[in-house]
Image (cartoon, rainbow, N blue to C red; front, side, top):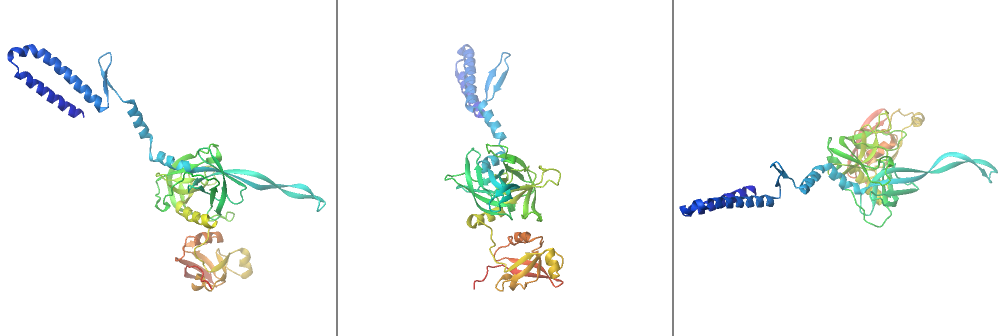
Length: 419
């Protein structure tokens, strides 16, 4: 724009000077002063017009004669506002409306009290029940109000479940299905309206080192239910945790993050820099140092979540797509002593369906299943989690123990043959 204005000025000057040279010499000196004055005025007007039309700066002269450009305040504010927006802020803006706080009320037994019984005609101990409230997080996955959270946050034992949205609205919710093994639950908001939703990402494409955001309501601190955000990176993927004898859940292929996850964040989404949910925040590992976050948080990968939630929404529980064709019991000290079995971890086969994959693979009652795939079986719950990694039509490698020797076979998984 300025270059064009300068060219225009040059053209005007050329025309004016040429005109002046054509005049007679006796009037040239008389008009020099007027011509110079006119040129100055024309240049001033052209420059002012070109600068004004460019919309950038307007020269201002102070008392000392120094000219300083004054920036357009509106344009400057817009630039600052734009510079503050990053992939992180955009991701938070995208996912936050669908992140909810979940309040669960349960009846728990705590101690006993003596109460007179007319039947026994004496005082008898009676369990004391009291209401206990706990809080967690979750996120909406469908416009009609389906909510995903952890099973340890909300389950069918709950007396009352209340879902709070970031705008302050609260709704009763019903537990449609739960899966204790995977620690996932599906809720349905009891309201006839349209809700904001999240978008799932592909957890199989998650990269170690990429940004991750933990969104939720830690410690249930904020009654407004507006979600809190912590930022970190994906520290590792495919983290497996061997089952604890006192813990029925089995966590496999977990996403590890150093984004701070604390009590109350459970059930909330782990989000990537595009605002897509790549996992469900589930637990932290403290190493016995404290009860707080030490940079080791774990989330159930989104692809596993979607597979389980699909079954919970239709059947209320998770079932295998195939029939392995045998039943097993977990190896115990009592079984070892009773049947003179080797003291090893595994599953004792107690029955085999002659029309099933196990029979076709050569498995018989009395065999001890040691491995499924390449995984050493730790418990029956662990084995169930391993079974879920296969689908109808897959081939499953099984390692077993029989009469002092180890054998390997393959089961070709299919549904039970109908009689």
